[in-house]
Length: 145
Image (cartoon, rainbow, N blue to C red; front, side, top):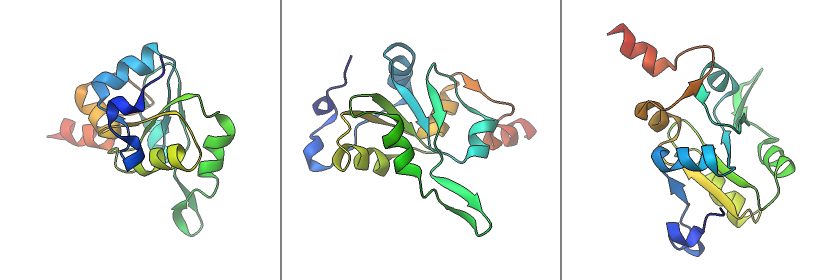
């Protein structure tokens, strides 16, 4: 099932297609979408969404100078996927991944790219399945209360 971006709004006017975790979960589990988590590698390894196709392509990388934008970020996405692939992008809050979705659509011509509205935090808040070796920091803080 290809997503009709016009369903989400008039994409030609800069609207970024986004879905809340409830709707995203079904597409990710049953419609062949790949979830690209753009959070830092350490955050992804600690805990990430549990769906059949998920991978981490971090937008930021750690160097001797500290955290810097990943110089190969867009190249990693465009070299691994073709324009018709079904992709969901997610960040911590969804705000970080929205401009990347826009760039993939308008600059690189991708046809089926959707932003995870609310990002990882919204997925976590809904209590949806997670994978990783630890709890996200927000959940650990709640456990301590």
